[in-house]
Length: 490
Image (cartoon, rainbow, N blue to C red):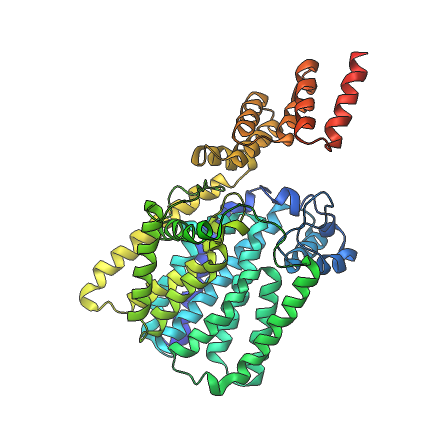
């Protein structure tokens, strides 16, 4: 069989495995932030507002929101296009996610094939296929594939992998402009696409290319980054508007290590996954999580050093680490601090590492390595099927989250909201109260007031609305609800 036919067979296998594994997500609904940034977003429903999308921060469509630290105009542009073509049907948005995941797996296969065999060796096909399948079925990627709002991860990763492939395979001015354009679009989907620049440099260093003499190839990349930076600065008005966690510089630094340990464990052993994680900041360098994270960093640096003469392994390790650097700064992150979706591109790096290691097995170890590969793929696939069921609806998602993160006020608040929508008012009241105990909130009291008001429990509703106003005197909806209660009492 010719190399071309082998590659076609491999691509077919990648597509078939992904379709079989992820087809169940096509019947899932909109969940979590989909309700805000998609269903509740006027920009998505009016293509005439495309100018506002590119000139504003991510949440600026709602004046009630505080200025956001994020800028994702291409995500909303895609949402606009899908809505214009098919309407706000979950099926089409989930179909797009599955298609993008397949495209990323294909790009990963092509990239790994080139790194392992220079694009010409049939011996590289099976290890590259193993890597692509490992990426395809990895349980950590269930969040990204199942969650419409996480499609920014899919898009920016496709842009980065495609740009790296072009950078690796092509030559000349056209190559630089094509890769730069993909890099630019990747940035407009998500800031993490900035990882392309250092990865391209590391590609050249690992492959012993003349980086300094090839500076013209990097000029379009730098121009793309500069244009994006100006657009982002204009839209957001600064680098970061607000911090989510109030930590000292020392605490911000030492808390990098618990996050590293947590991400490494989820990447290697993806169990106990959740939409929200509890993160309790470390206060001392003697904290075991800090020590564990430091050990992971030292082991990783050693692996990086000893792999410097093996391009595929070195680049795979680099892809695992570089995209994670921006999400290790705890004060800039959400209250959950970590999320599965941040491991999407790093999981592609892990896949390249696995492909590189598979390339080294000789005929004597073939049976053992095949058994290991099959067991790993089946285990991750089973985990992905289970997680896809959790992402089916808000009720199931948040029921799972409160089990995994019982001390997270966000998990309880969201489960209470989902329970109320499902008509389960008993659970809604219980979990709103639990959310309020963990973190006093005017929204919690207002939501409880609405439930009690709907049950004609006027005195209880009156108490909750007054509690909401005590916490937030500018809460106009609570004030209006109190006026309605006074009218009912007259």
